[in-house]
Image (tube, rainbow, N blue to C red; front, top):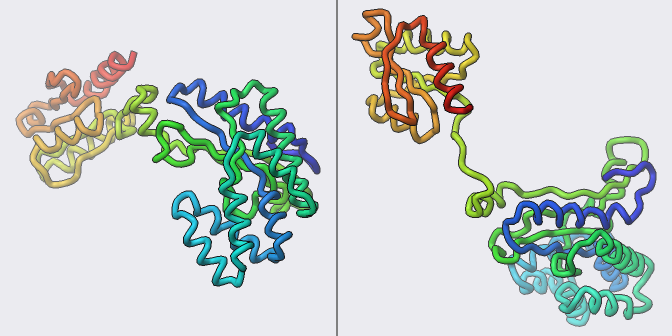
Length: 317
């Protein structure tokens, strides 16, 4: 969602509603949308006396806590000269536990931290309040100050979504608010908020839930085999005929026995394997195999495209 000059926080509240709708419809298990606001930790670091560059570096390190634990962050802060009270304060903030309401109340109770911090707390409270108005179950949306999103272009609200029963997948849907990103490319302010879904991480779970089935590992429906290297030219001719009739075909150019080529055709999901054999070609014919049934037929070369078209159409329709 992109605004022209300004963008209401209602857009931020609508994003988790979209996430919730998507994963509810996918029905791949329980999920939790974790939400925070970068201004909170940024403002707190400014309050502790860190400058902009130091703050950006600390945010990137703190973003690794969930994967690496707190020791690397403690070491990084210590080397940078931070005293123990500051280190403890930062880690206490990002590791705070409790319900969303409890965390928001605790954040509001901190006074004198600064304008940026207070703005972040106010924005987070508003987004959480209106997100619930979109009908998101409380169990699916949780304030979590431990999500930081180490990328500098995030300026406010941030999201991460995980499958509750499959934490090893990590974040499967994340994003946030970026007020300044588009201004790097155009001469105006275009604040935005958005998310991306990590489908590569989701594939295993989608397959397990039988929401997605494995399809052919090829866009071609026909494999033209080469039982002998002397048949390369004929294989090229046959593939050209098929392609000119809008039938996608792949030629097997590797040196291999026919049995291996047919196993390859089966594994990759080809519907048809064309098998040009000398005895058939001498009679003006060519053999092809229906990879589903294993049935082979020999037809005139000129009729091959039509026969394969009928076979592939019947198998898909």
